Amino acid sequence: MAASPLLPLLFGALLAAPSSTARPLSAKASAAPSGGVEVRVGVLLPGRNLRYPWAWPRVAPALRLALEALQPQLRHAGLAVRTAFASTEDDDGTCDYEVALLQATDLKCSLDPDVLLGLGCDNSRRAVAPFAQYWQLPLLSAGAYWWREDGTTVYAGPVGPDFSAFQAQLLRHFNWTSRVAFVLRYEAAYGDFSVLTFMDQLSSNPNFTAPVHRYYEDEEPGDEAVRFIQANGRVVYICETLEKLQEFMHLAQAQNMTNGDYVFFYLDISGESLKAEGHREAAKPWQSKESRDTGGLREAFQTVLLFTSHEPQTPEYRHFQSQLILRAQRDFGVALNDSVGTLVAGCFHDVLLLYLRALNETLREGGTKRNTSRILEKMRGLKIQGVTGTVSINSDNKREMDYDLWAMRDVESGEYQVVAHYVGPEKRIKWLGPIHWKKGPPPLDNPPCVFDMDDPSCGQARHSGGEGEPLWRLWSSCG
Image 1 (cartoon, one colour):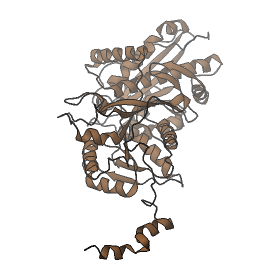
Image 2 (tube, helix red, strand yellow):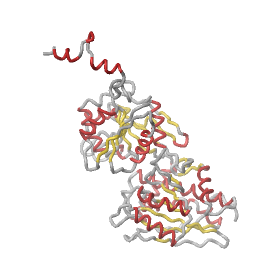
Image 3 (spheres, rainbow, N blue to C red):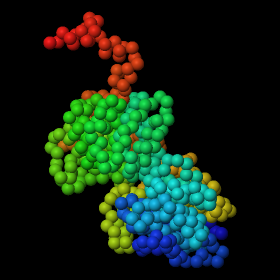
Image 4 (tube, rainbow, N blue to C red):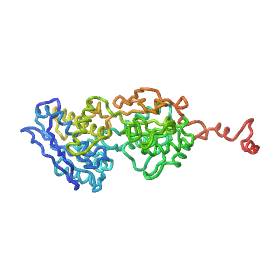
C-alpha cells in the first residue's frame, strides 16, 4: 500500500447517548477501498455519568476532532476505521468491574477490535487489561492511573508515575531525605493515585520513613489527623476535599502547626481549588465558597503548597477546548465547564493520534495492524505535538506529563501563583519564583530529637537540666 504522512481513517463512531442496558453500540463505517485496510476500534467508557472526567460525552467529541483533523490524509490513503462503543457503567451509573469485562468480551466477539480505547476507571481497567494482553491488543487509556503492570496498556492521562519523579526531585531540592507523612482517604479520588504511587515508592525505600493516616470519606480527619502529624511528620501530603483541608488547617493553626515548622502539600489535579466559586476568588484556596476569610486561614495557608496538572495555554489547546465544549453541548446536551475533563479528553485525543502514527509506520514497514509489540515499540520511540503538548511514551508505556507547584506568593492578598513547573518529557523542574517560607528556610523533615530518640544526646537533653541537675529535681522545686 502507498505510504502516507498519517494513517488515514474514516470515523464513524456513534455520537448518541448509550442505552441503559449498556450494550455495545456499533458505529456505521465506510468500507475500506479495494485493497485497503479496515482498522477496528473498541471504545469502553462510562456512558452517562459526568462525574468521571473520561465519560463518553466528553471523550467522543475529542475523538471526532482528532479524526477530522486527519481527514485530508484519510481520504487519500485508503484505510477506514470502524468503531463501536460500550458503556462500562452499571445500572446505578458507576464503573463496574463485571460490566466492563462482559462488555469487552462482547466487543471482542462482535467487532474483533484491533485496539481498545478508554477504560478510565481503575476497576474497569483492572478487569480488562489482562484480557487485552491475552488478546494482544493495545489498550489506550487516559483515566485513573493503575500503577501495577498493565501489559499492553498505554497510559496517557494526567495522573501517573511522573508525579513520583517530580516529588523525588522536590524532596532532594529541599534536602528532605528521611521522613514524609501522608493523610489519605480510604476511597481514593481521582488524582489520589499519583500520591499513592509516590507513597508506595517511598515505603519501599529502607532509608525513608513514610507513616500514613487513613480515614473514611464520611469521617472528619480532624483532631486525630493533627495528633498523627505531630507525632510523625513535618513534611505532609494531604488527600481530601478542599473543604476538609480548610477545616484541618483551622485545627492545625490552633495547635501552632502553621508557624513554619510544617509544610502541607495538597494535590488538586484539576486545579478546582484555584477557581473562583461562590464567594471564593480565583487563586485563593483559603477562602470558602460561603464567605471570604480575611485573615485566619490566609495566614495558615502560607504553609500549604498545591500541585496541579499543567494545563496547556497554547492557542491549539484553547481551540480544542472551545470545540469540545460546543460539540458536547450539540451532540449530548452536556455543558462542560471543568478543566480536568477537558484535559483528559485532550489526552485521549492525543494518544489516539500517537497510536495512528505508530500504526502507520508499522504498516509502511510491511507489518500488520496486529503487530502489537511493534506498534507499542513505535509508540515508545515517537514524540508528537498534540493539543495537550508534547506527547511521548516512556519504557513503561506511560506518557510523561507536566505538573505545576503553586504557593502563596503575595502574602498580603493571599493569592497563589505557580512557583515551579515540572516538565515531564525533560524530567526537570523549572523554577519560576521563590517560595516564601515563614521562617526563612524550608522546614526540616526530621528535626533532631523529635522523631528519632535513639541519639544519646537526645536522652541527655531530655533527662538533664542546668548544671547537670535532673529535670525531675528542677520540677519538684517549682512550687
